[in-house]
Structures are given as C-alpha cells and as structure tokens.
Image (cartoon, rainbow, N blue to C red):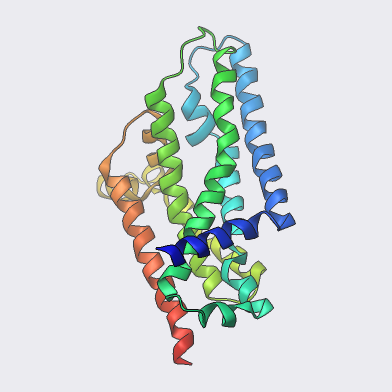
Amino acid sequence: MRQFLVLLKRELGSYFVSPIAYVMICFFLGVMGISFWMLIAVMAQGTRDVTVMRALFSESIFFWIAILIAIPVVTMRLFAEEKHSGTIETLMTAPVTDAKVVLAKYFGAVLFFAAMWVPTVAYLWVMRYFSAEGAPIDAGLVASSYIGVLLMSSAFISIGVLTSALTRNQITAAITAFAAIFVLFLAGFVPYISSDPTVQNVGSYFSAVSHMIDFSYGALDTRPIILYVSLTALILFITIRAVESRRWK
C-alpha cells in the first residue's frame, strides 16, 4: 500500500509541474463557464421549465465537449511521456508491480480530473439566485449528478490510460482515446434514432447521454453503475497485461 501511495503522489505531482495541466484546467473551466453563463441568461429571463442539473450536465453540449477533449489530454502523457523520455525503464525496474503502476496512474488521473470539477460546485449556489423561484438546492440531485460524472469519466479515463500504454507518442494517445470515447458517445444516440424496441433497450443500457439524464434526475440506477465499474475494471486489466508484455520482449 505504501508503494502505491508513493506512486500516486508522484503522479499527482507530475500534473502540477506540467503547463499542459494548467492549460487544460483553464480550457475546462472556460467551457463549463460558457455553459453556466448561458444557463444564467435563461434563468434571468424567468424561464420556469429549466432543470438546473440537466441543463448544466446532460443536456449541455459544452459539458460533452469538456469531457471529450479534457480526458484524452489529461491521460495522454501517463505512459507515452515516460516511454518518450526513457523514464519508463527506471519505473518498471523499480520494486513495484505493474498493477500498482497502472492503478497509480489511473487514480492520479481520476483525482486530478475530479479536482477540475470542484470549482463548478459554486455554480449551483450562484444559479439559485437567478432561478425563477429561488428554490433551494436539492442535495440529492447534486450528489447524483456528480456521482454520474465521476463514474462515466472514470471509465473514459481508463480508456485514455490504455491508449497511452500502447504508444510512445502523446498526440497519438490523445487522438486514439478521443476516437474511442467519441464512438461510445455517438453510440449513446442509438436509442433516439432507432424505432426497434430491442435496439432502443440495448442502446439505452450503453448510452452515456441517457445515463447522465437519469443521474441529473437523481436516479441512481444500478445498471449504469455496474456498466461503468465493469468497463473500468476490464480496461484496466487489459492495460496491466499490455504493460506486462514489455517484460516478454
């Protein structure tokens, strides 16, 4: 456990010495800020049919832009940079297991990405004063929405960790991760474009858009939770095997 914590601290520290991390934070908060500003503008007009959590999360195109771009950039350097600089050999010959290295990089990325979301919590209290009725914040809806974001983002981050482990080029890792995550995102629209009930039911199970809509309503369905946890575990298992394969060469 001590080795894992040392590796995790190393990963978190590496983010805050990289200018890319600060650029990504500014980009992320800027995009979410645009979504927040547009929502405030609607609420200032006295519109009553706006659901705050849905407007800020699931139904906002800016929310998905932030997710689709931020995650590949945050994860692209994890293994690719180590390979390019040659420090991967030192890391892999240290007295730590490959699983601990992969998990430390994964949880480091998850914690950094979660930290990027912390400032957005303040949006909710600001929006209260611009709502038509000044209704109190529903803590259940807020918690459910952020849990949904964390679950979905954690699964997407695991994809970024895998793509970074498969290449030594950060740009290639970012583009590959973006393509994979974008395909999953597009697959989420299958329930909305198909008239086949079976396709709709299966598609809704894998639809990130549908999941976020449910989470923003406060519905903590076990199906998307199991889906994202299982997908994360599977991809991390594949990543560990990919890292271990270096020892076989």
